[in-house]
Image (tube, rainbow, N blue to C red; front, side):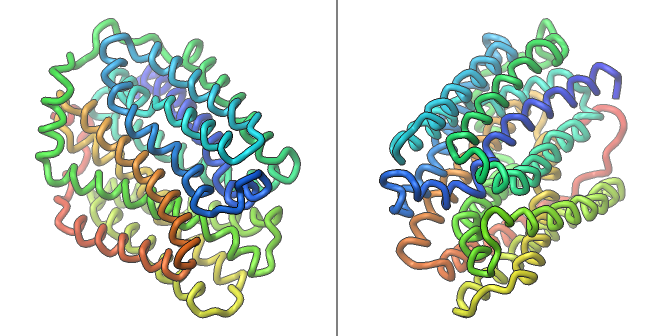
Length: 399
């Protein structure tokens, strides 16, 4: 990487990180904290408030991508982060579940993922783009990990409204990074957009991209759905919510050590095997959590800890390898469209998981929830199995 590419990669990964940290900080404590608000005793509404963010984001991901082609990436990213900060502020000031719902919806409307990813693609050569994308994916995994550790501690100190206030501050910090740290945009984009929707047809015509898009949808559906049930299971296992980080921190740190194996497999050209292995790990965890929930016995803390460690091994591997595979498989002229589609399905997964998790826990209970997430993982593994092995990454262009 040239110094400029390195600066672009780290600063744009930093914007993703600030925004995702703000989002993820709310995730582990939202289901428990939202109960304190008027209307918070309705699990389906709590699930909807958790997931509505993904729905508004999904609708706006591609329009923001198109706007960034026409108006310039940085302008659109700053505008999106301002909307996200405004949503955080609304949620921080909310005094009912409805107010939280409106704030979360507005947060989602600042859908800058596709524009940030497109700017990263503008500023990196094909040969180093995978590394840059993996950096963004890794930063998201790291923030999820950090949030799981910090959220229970912060929630005990400043409550849910304080967490949303912090999210607003992180979004404003992201704007400062865009304005003063990210390198200037190229005068012309390396690839002139050729009608966004022509690109979309090409993206959906490619079987492997369809598989990866389904994959990111299922991953985030499962992630959101399981976190509707996991905090309550940890409480049953005898861990008060302010101590949940005792479980999350070791699970996450150890899983990052395991991540080294992913990059070794990538160098050996075995990324497909790493991807399928990671999906299998997520499936094993869903089956394990389902068995714990269905047994009727009180969950055992060390069993929960082991399951969460295995989940993070799979989750972090997928979060780093899937966007990297998308950016490698999509031909250069449709790369923006491919990443727009990928980000849209990621957002839809976040919505579906929150809504599905809330509804299933309310009407059917946790064992059925994990039965459904397990079935989704089996489907995902079957669909992903025919994925073509990716050729070993050359140093030059990816054409």
